[in-house]
View 1 (spheres, rainbow, N blue to C red):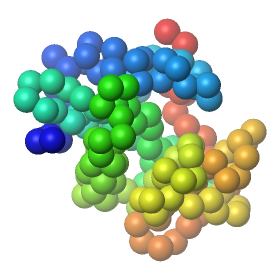
View 2 (view 1 turned 180 degrees about the vertical axis):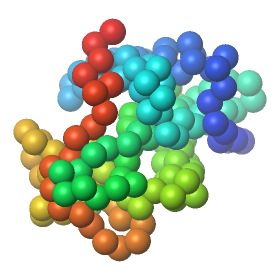
View 3 (view 1 turned 60 degrees about the horizontal axis):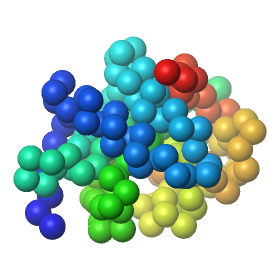
View 4 (view 1 turned 30 degrees about the horizontal axis):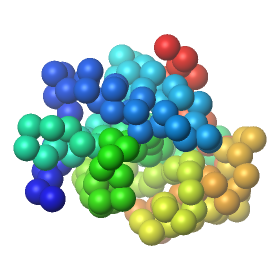
Length: 168
């Protein structure tokens, strides 16, 4: 696989929207609104990182990162997700490559840490871990994980952007 990773371009948006919808279509844990969320983040200028994996001229994956707020006032923290790969391309390292590139870009932009809601087995491979004292209300602790780039972890309640409430 010869994949390149780059920032999204305006002409990529329709493909990214279809890709995200397809990636989550059969996921039982999904709200099936992930593509609406990314578009709402983009419209509200809260899509801090939006990278695509491209093979040839085809977009095969996408990752989004947006700011979060923490009740303790900790700043420069972000939320990863969604990360999406076309169903026929999953399990081939596309998501892992996008994850590593997105976290590197977030650090380059001055982010001090990132949270994610998802599989501990998958996200743990990239250094994410549940941390007592850092919570997302209504979510079991083991599925809400954090990665600090400077070693310090804030405590408090995390809130994602209001775009995460998008349903269309």
